[in-house]
Amino acid sequence: MEKNNKSVCDRKHFNTLFDMHAESLRNFMYYRCGDLYQAEDLTQDAFIKLWDHCKKVLYEKAKGFLYAVAKNKFFNEVAHKKVVLEYTKLPQQQVDVESPEYQMEGNEFMERLERAINQLPEGQREVFLLNRVDKKTYAEIAAMLAVSQTAVEKKMQKALIKMRKIVKNI
Image (tube, rainbow, N blue to C red):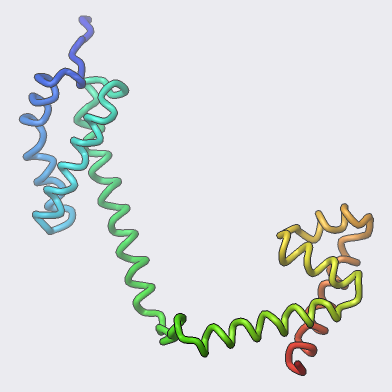
């Protein structure tokens, strides 16, 4: 059996692949998405990716590569549209983050939060800051402090309860 030595990176062979598969790939994607412009974009993207990866793709596998790339790009676009749709369904809060009132409220909250953290007992403050600022897990904190994970969980619970009370009263 003779091995085909055609390279996808050879412009002549690439053009041959384009001539052979562009129309059928576009039609395939059009039937899938129902939008001719989108189908043409997906086809172009697939050929661009083939050219970008021409050294990695065997000439005999180019057709399969093109179809896989186009389908995956289409599925990614559909998934993105779903995310956008879900986001638009969420109630949008109208807050002017540039307003001086908003910035002042944020600054006041941060000051209250700092005061509340400073009022925590040392053990609770240490656990709270390790978890919430340094993003350590309870198990990591327990190992660092040489205490049980249950002890860390209890300190964190007490810290959160106390923080809520302090922030409300400040």
